[in-house]
Length: 103
Image (cartoon, rainbow, N blue to C red; front, side, top):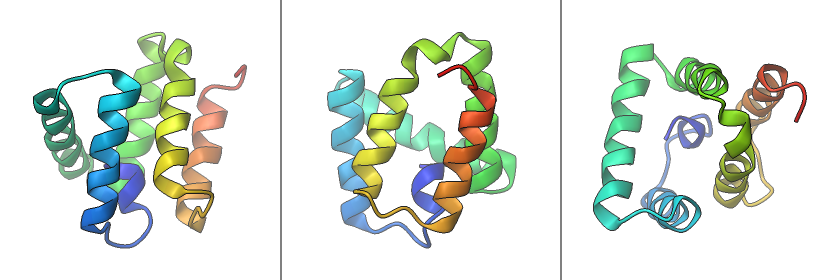
């Protein structure tokens, strides 16, 4: 959710693509994917913006040994951006790579 919001206002098609990517990459149910998206919106609100939320989740993921799952996150981001990252999305990915320097 936060990654999408770094590129202007996300479209319905982008939200739908996120939903499909969550289901396929995380192998979760329809309801679980919806819940993840709702949770994503909540985290963005709690953090005060998309970039702050993205960085907070990346740091938390690292604490939870999320480096093991970094490839999945990158697959989701790549599927959302379709090789057209905005400057803010590029900055966020760069920040994430700083958080996970050994990957």
